[in-house]
Image 1: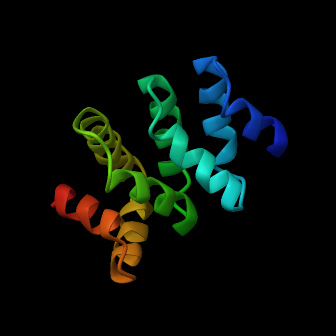
Image 2: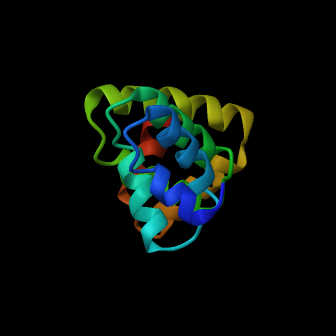
Image 3: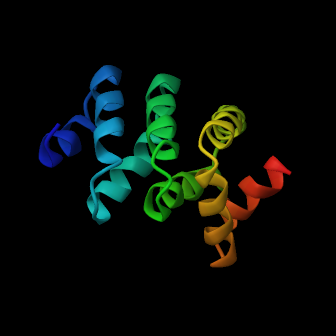
Length: 120
């Protein structure tokens, strides 16, 4: 999905379009994409959140994991529980996620530190 189409789909009334946008925006840089991903991580539909979290944690770059930790630090209980489950699975399947979390925590990322504390 093209960047502009993904940004437009991120605001769609259709949860399917928002979920597809979440997946596509993981690879897009920029403040507008960061804001769209943050909104999708706080979506009303858990399927959208699931796609966003899975996509972010499958790509353990500092930017992708940082997007996850920004929302992780402020997630509601229900979403936080879901994010914990996805985080546990992602770390088991993709060990570089933990390394990236540690690097972000060393730089002062509170969400990364919370995630590491939860994993301990």
